[in-house]
Structure formats: structure tokens, C-alpha cells
Image (cartoon, rainbow, N blue to C red; front, side):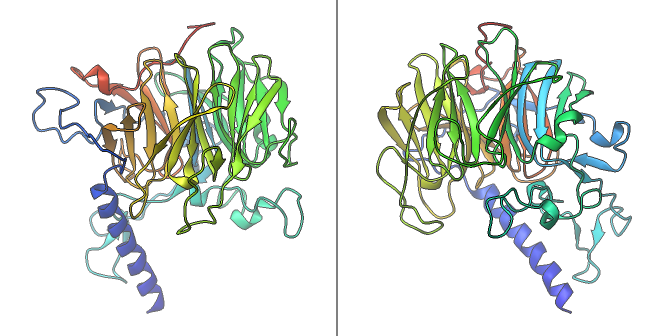
Length: 438
């Protein structure tokens, strides 16, 4: 009886959350969400994909590759498109393929023990990949040593710590698997190539290793490590759970540092430390009064650069706001987000080459376009595991053909979207900035 009640509670919670997320528009101060369609004149479109069409079965499932027949994509942390034929995708290992038993309705886990005709998935959900994927504890109990991932499950059964860095082509084929670096990584969080680097080095931020790893473009060599792996700190040679990066027009770059530290760190084009700014806010957690002072942060979970003004946009996630600074860390202005019930909860802040500002809201499960003062322009998405659903989007990139790629920690994996015919270009995520290479 107790098991039936637990399963029923999970089902009701999933249904309730799905309904809430579907009805919860991105809550931005001074909303001005347009009623214009992403594709003018389109008939019968409710636009769950906005101005895009999802490319189904891209990429081909991990289980189709040799040696991975029983494994699929884990929590999708980051994605970067060097080109349509070379898309870097990082994830927190692999998860078991779940082959649902044939039950009432033909598939899904039957709910005979709960209620008639109830099957899973419920509300379009099957599994929360970020909860199922490692790592475990950050530190071993009572120490500052790297934790033991056994509390996240059994490697080889509940998850497989492998396939963390993949390269995918336009057809969805996995053309490279950088397995040689799997054991070095622990919680790869984001991936980049500097648009100002003709050699196209690949940067991977690992927040549990407190480090940024720089590889050759083919992944055969580790060129440089920023931070001290497994040693947290807050100075020129240490990070404490860094999260994202962004590049400025002179090749310098910024890292949001991060989950534990509350600062932004600047490096020059040669990866040398320049400066850092940010203080810890007074926010003590959920329900606590949010910090209102500038240059104080709680959970620095995203950074972006406006290439025209060189201003740096910082996602102050724990305080429901975006803080804007000049290129050297001087405070410029604040974008306050609505702090109504339930959110928002921004996973990233991103500025494209057209200077359009994009965020993903984990509460509404929508990709939202804002103007540079924070007014909402357009938003689309929805909770679920169906093709095109935006469940826990954590990484964003665009290629030279303006295809959009979104990695997701919730639904797992990465998805590719192509612009719909006749789509209003004002609603498309703009291409990347290309300088040293195209």
C-alpha cells in the first residue's frame, strides 16, 4: 500500500509540475511579450518550438555506437558548434537505456498498482537525467578531498562514467569520442572555442575539479589547465566550482566562478589572470531575502559579453537578477527579474552576434529573448521528453547556418533546431561572432 501511495504521489507531482510549467510564463519585470507569431501568417501553430523546427533523431543515440549498446546520453551540460559538421557536446557520463515493458497502451510502465489506465511517462517525463547522472558528493565527509561518486550509484550499472566529450556532425553521427579524458573529468559544465583563436583550442570548464582544461582542437593534447584541479580557492590560480565562460573582442575572456565562489574572473587572450570582482551576498538560501547591493552575488551561473559595448552580463542566479559591468568589472546597471512565486531560475545568460540577449528559465522551461534592459520580447519551450521539449536546457550555441543547439541536464542529451521557413529573423538566436576562423 505504501509503495502505491509513493508512486501515485510521484505521478501527481509530475502532472502538477507539468501543468504549472506550461502555464508559467517567464516572469520578467516590465513584461512586453509580443503577440506576433514567430512565423507571420502561419496557421494552426501554437509554436512550442518558436521560430524553429526540431531535427528529430539528431544526434543518433549513443546506444547505436560500438560498445555502448546499453547506454544513452546523460545530463547534457554544454554544447559548442565550431561548424555544422563539428559540434562539441559534453555530458556527465552515460545513463542506461530504459526499454519500457509492453503494458496497457503498448508501452510505458503500467500503473495497475496505482490507478486504472495510468502509465508512465507522466506529463511527458521519463527520467530526470541530472538527478540520475553523477557526480556524487563534492568532498569526502569531513575532508576537502574529492568526493566518492559511489553515492550517485554504481558505475557500470546505474551510470557509466564514459563518453563525456563527443563531437557530432550535421547528420547526427558521433564522429569523435574523447574517451582519453573521461577519467580526468568529474563534472564537466560547459565547453567553448574562442572565436579569436585561429587554432580553435577547446576549453572545458569542470566545476567539481575547480578547473578549466584547454585542449587541442582534435582533443589529442591537454595544452593548459587554469585553476588547480581538486583544490578549491579564490585567487589567481584557484577556482571554486566555476561554471561558464565568455570572450571579449580583444580575445580576453571571463569565467563565472561560480557555485561556491561569488565572483567573475578575467583572463587575457593568452589565458593569463587579469583581475576578479564580486563579493558574497547575504542570501542564505530559498525563501531568504535576496541581495540588493551591486557587485554582490549568490550563485554566479552565467556570463556573457556585448561585443559592441564590451559590457559583461553576469547571471546572479541566487538573487534573480542580471548584473552588468564594464570590461574591467565596474558596475554599470542592474536587470531585476520578477521575484514572484516560483521563480525565475536562470540557467544561463547568452548574447549573440546580433546583440540579442537570451536566457533559459528553469521554472517555465522556456528559452526567452530579452532586450538589453531586461524586457521580455519572446519565449518558447515546454516541459517534457518529447522531441523539441526544453527540460533543463543548460547549454546553447548556433552554427554558421543558424542552426540552434541546446544541451539539457533534465531531459538529457542535446537537440538541434533549424529555422522554420518564413521565420521572423528577429526571433532567431543569432550566429556566433567569428574573427580568427569561420
